[in-house]
Image (cartoon, rainbow, N blue to C red; front, side, top):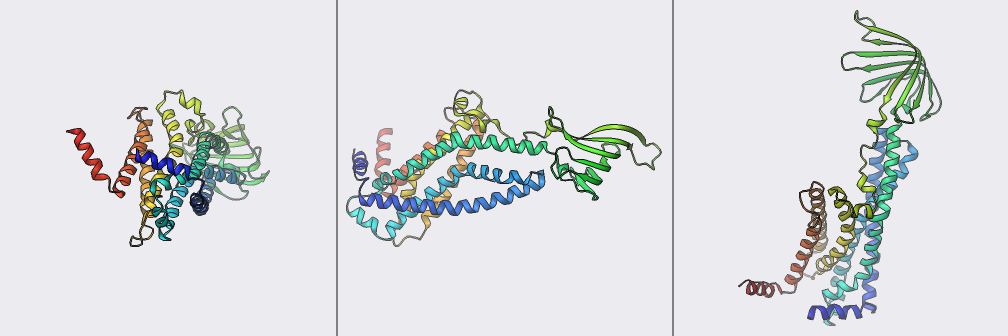
Length: 386
């Protein structure tokens, strides 16, 4: 009853100057921490996408959208961590400046801080809920479309004239004396073509006077239409070589069916209603994961208040270190539970919810320990057991 009364009192005091001062500090620190973490993640995304563009031949025009989609995907996690650290730093600042001591003398304690911080936590939680349920699935769909198009675009789009080029990890060596059309042109034309392919049993050498690159609209495979040429199965100097003369020969460069959609997970782009009515464990896991991210912020806000409580004799910024460790453990536990749910090892009723309940229980025990109520709770439980 006393706990309920304190929370009710905090609710009535939420429009006071002290509460607004706490919220303003939390908003400012959340923005600052979010900006710093975002810049680090953004730089990392740029480097990774440049590496992928070199590896998979992603056009330069697709790099900026892909980096943007990856950033939107990471915003819920970045924002969760930023708000959590901001709450710890805000409360810690109040205690270090003795402002919290004055508030404690007025009867305003941890429970009041937990309520005062909610006008910051709830809008951010709703924003992350919007991201995880609507925006991120859309970005995943758009990203898969771009990556699929890039997979269907042959690495041969970057052919250079009068230069030997190795493709497919050295399995194919290509040379042409003249190229007509810009890099990436779907109908790029070549003259005096030499192609060396290391086959399973014997090498294949193909010579052609002309060639044209095109993409099959049905299979999305990429082909070279070779004209007026020869194919040697085995080296020309070998006695058992096979020679094939042709007027027109279509040589498949990239298998569109095999290359498309390798990294795309359809659950990530499905709508919430489709996931809700699905019995597929992967769909259930994706549904619970989307709801877990905004829910985790609400739970972590209580922990942030407790970790931010410091004393002048206590170590500086220890709460931040403990907070980062708790955040990592919390998210790793959610990822493990998600994997177990996807594999069908746990029921959907248990799902990811047990992680949130466990975290909430740990926060309750920490609160009881900080307020020296743990022995009273232990004695009460022992009496009920007896």
